[in-house]
Image (cartoon, rainbow, N blue to C red; front, side):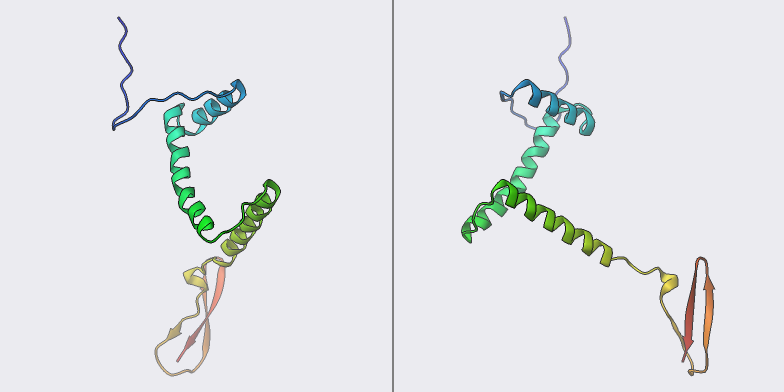
Length: 125
């Protein structure tokens, strides 16, 4: 007698999906790479993405936005990716060593403070 594989915790339901062999291989490869072979976890991840996209679709319908054709959708996604990349470049934070500090007291001179890999001017008041 063989032991049954333990089910993962939580309430689950089993359902059947029919796909072509090439799709099955792709899904299995993705599950192996991303979810340690757990195809159910892959489907759950797809469902979370669908739940995220549904409100966006409802918003677009509510505002009567036209559905985009394949090429237009790809173009829009590329434009968004470019904007995100530009925003990431702009958001670089300065290191604490790069910030100019004012020392308390009268403004008498500007002194240079040497930090590793950078030189910062320090102004005193």
